[in-house]
Length: 463
Image (tube, rainbow, N blue to C red; front, side):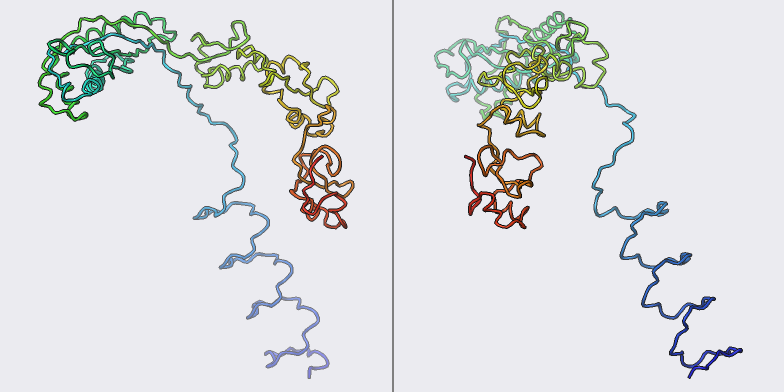
């Protein structure tokens, strides 16, 4: 039994058995030695002073508030789940992108009528019925291979070479053997040559064309009596066209065909479109005379490959005239397009041809082929009134079902008698059947399907 009153002199040793009645109040002086086993009930409040020794294992429940300072030691592995939102740079790059790659000014020249003769006529036409077509293919390759190393001027190249005639006959026609007896075999070919201009506006095209002609006439002439060319041609025929080398013994010599080629400059380099602010200022032009600051700015702002892109960027207010479009405010069948009646009652769209000039000049941005498309784009907040104000009885919705929160029934997305409830707004949820609509949104309404005018399948259609 416990003593009736506490002793004035406490015992020096604890009792062998603990008291069955614990003290009613905690000691004013906490124990200096922690208990051997932790309490089964954790404290409701954290300790005033954190432990100097952190726990060996992390908590299963992460803290709701992030730490005030970052860890001195970053994690070794990245997060398993990436961030849901991308980072946003605070400032643009200090290094701008390079100026656009502008096509170098160039001229393209078609030379017609170069020719080369084979001295004797013992070519193997009778052995290979399509020999002249094969010869044409091989010559196209080997003449280019012969001339290319001689193009030492920067900006020059041979674009194409085509054999056109053999002995006055178009390539592709089989030549009669009697045509080849005891005569020269003349091969005529056309050549397309490219030369980059040395000035931005290509006003040196005439001089460059003459220089290209001189180059070609001089170097094509060296094909005559060229052993290197003849050997390369024979090797091509043997390697790529399966001609027997012994059948080419008759190809011993070439000479000039005595023909003089003609030439035509058929194209100047493609110029880019730019806004004509210094001129009439009604559209974009491409004449190679744009200001230097336009060339130095990124492509897509001042310089454009397509006229329509330049007009869209800088002349949207005068798009039709800029792009050279007539009657753009009409539909594909010549019908008037719909436009928002912002300057009138501002309730709906019209197609009476009374649209403002800026809409006519850029119908792609402001006008629509159907009333429904116009109302959806410009009056979505007042869709039913927009369609109704124009008296469009032919406009229909999806015929799906959506809840009517005023009458607590489901109605169809259509215009007409019940169960049509008018066209659904953009925020109305749509369901394929009346049952699904009632079960999902109005499941507490008794006989929702019947009150909504639906059938057992919910397939009531607009009248």
